[in-house]
Amino acid sequence: MEPYKHFAIFIAELRHSIRSLGVSIIALTIGLFFLSGNLLLFLQEHLDEKLYFFSVAGPFLAHAKVAFFGALYVLMPWIMYVVWKGIGRPFGVTGRKLFWYVFATCFLFYSGTLFCFMITLPYGVDFLLGFQSEELKAVISVGKFVNFVTIFILAFGIIFELPVFMIFSAGVGVPRKVFEQNRRYALLVIAILAALLTPTPDVVNMALMGGPLYFLYEAGILVIRIFRLDRKRSIDPPGDRDGSSAT
Image 1 (cartoon, rainbow, N blue to C red):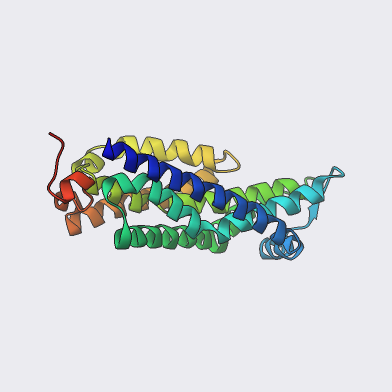
Image 2 (image 1 turned 90 degrees about the horizontal axis):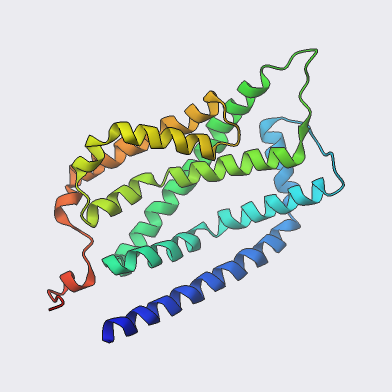
C-alpha cells in the first residue's frame, strides 16, 4: 500500500498547486486590468491599427482579455512548473532535472512569443490588410483584434515548446526513429494544428505557424541524435533508478 500512499500525497500536492495557481491568475488578472489600457495601446501602436467597438461591453471585455493574457504570460514559469511536476514526477523529473525542464520550456515559450510579436504578427497583419482598397476599408473591432493578437502570440509560445516534449519522450523510451520515420504524419498534424491554432484559416497564417513548427520538429530530432537521448534513457521510472522493481 506504500506506493498508493505516495501517489495520494502527490495528487494532494498537485491539487494544492493548481488551486494556488488559479487564485494567482485571477488576482493578477484583476491587478493587470488597471494597466490593460496601456497594454492595449502598446499592441495597437506596434501594429499601427485603429480600433473600433460595436457593443457597449466591447471595450470592457477587450481590456479583461488583455489582462488575463498578461497574467498567463507573467505566470508561465509557475504554470510550466505545475505541468512538469504533474507529468514528469512518475518518470523521475524532480529536483535539478525539473528545474532544467521548466527553464527550457519557459525559454522556448518566451522565444516563440517574441518571434511572433516582432516578426510573424506584423507581417501577417500587413499581408491580410494589404487587400483593402479605396472602396474596401478595414474597420477592426477591438474585441476581434485582441482575440487575434493574444491567441496568435500564445499559440506561438506553446508550439515553440515542441523540442522539449520530444526530448522528454525520448527520455522515457520513444526511439528517435519514431520521429524520423513519421515525418509525413508530423507534417499532417502540424498542418492541422496550424489550422486550429491560427485565428484565421488562411494559408499565409498557417504557413507562418506551420513553418517554424516543422523546423522545431527537425531541431528536436537533431538534439536527440547529437546527445543520444533515446539511448541514455535519462528519465527513468523511480523504481528503475534505485534498482528496485515490483516482484
